[in-house]
Image (tube, rainbow, N blue to C red; front, side):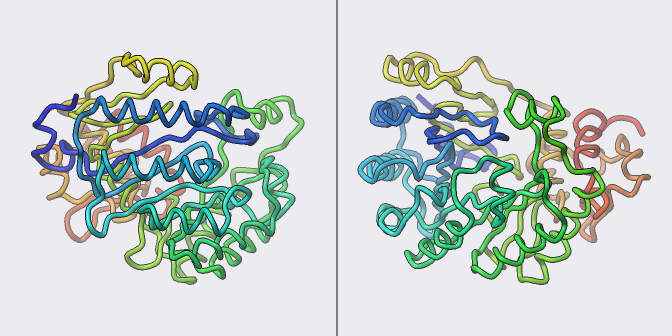
Length: 392
């Protein structure tokens, strides 16, 4: 049970967001390192039972401002189970008026019937895993959908009255700068309200990473990847999508409110296999094994190991690291309210990245990444998490 104090306090204490993980996939893509379960659709009903049990153990209901159902492939759930999921969220985490409710979908498992069902059960936003409009890039990523299915999925969602966030990936083996430009222009022509543009990562142990290690697949050069990222930063604003985070762009007022809670380092609920949460100042993550999750949830056993609690300077560093993902950066008043520390006190230890032109002050006295800093965000992150608040 969540203590009563969770109902009272600022948003970094009181969760106003809930994440639900749906792990089922028909296929594992070569670059995927997420907590997923392939070919186990027969266990979907038991999984919903386990979600109900986990949510019930929290107590509540807990009013929230955002729902986010990720995966996996949540759109793979059949309609009766999607209805069950919507009812569970409405009962345990009632959404505030005007709240944001997102479900992730892949083009091959998303059609008009599911789109209208989602709208009817309380969802108003869908995040579609397009990744590319090039069949060559989709094949390199071992994505299961055909290239022309993505435009159909966006149209289906918009016709159902759902806002659309479109995911794209750059840095795909064999992808050229002109291919990436075509992807950007094509996605903008479809009219989503939000675009995420992620650089491909080669996570250890994934099939794609093993292929690169063996020399079978050649990654793109760092210079070409940087050029692709720069192209997105230059091109998407001219198409109406303002960059508001390292990898995210949106039409005016259509940024992801759920993800904003993460970058502000606010509290959030998380339920499901592999789900992370930040509640009562503690971060914890559920087991990533499907059978283990279902058994423990139904038996009322702990689903995660003891979590991590950061305080003082460590908590301030984490908050600054997350704030700097936003293009507006860290705001001094917000930072002081959140951490109890002055933002200016964090800056001396960041002299190296500041002198390198990776960070700059804002007119409000805040701190943000420069354009060069956005390109080298991992370098800045390491400095922030280890040196911010320390001596110059």
